[in-house]
Length: 261
Image: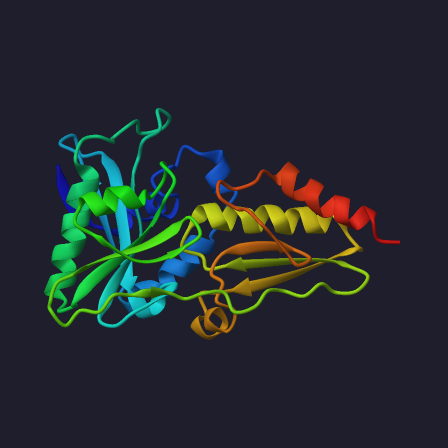
């Protein structure tokens, strides 16, 4: 196994989080590509894990914490680490040490950049981005918000723990309309998928629905709301992980629209 930096040969694979076989992820459109084009000039780093046969099986992406959805000083922030675990497409690469190798490479790169530490987020539930996995790698809990845990590892005595940036407000309902609000940063195809499905549902339902879209890759807009990726129907936040189907999103909006006289 070896860890390599992302290069043009593998960019399209990276934009689909190694799931180029998935028609579902292709629904997410080109938003991640646009996000990458913007953030690669701001210090975004992407590394890939390649097995002995030359196949790409894992990825990690990280940037300076000032461009993330947490706050801290002189730290890098891991947006996600993913080792392909599906039988479809390229197959299952998990349980082979790729995740640990990717994390170690990111830590070494962060140290070489002169940063004081590195942060990551994880879930308290036993699936994608498990907080417990990071704790096994020596990360400490810095902050919690619902099922999301903010973790970190300091590299110097001067390193300070990061904190979550919390939601400051929520969208208001527009009188006489179903008000649909989508917040999208762009870094995650799964969240981009929610946006594309919502946009399609709103267009199909029509006149009784108004859609507001917020590009939270704009740092000022993100800090104004304290929301990175989210879907609201009127003033109710809808769970988007795992991503709801198009049919479910459409049904939720249509149910609200049917009540408007």
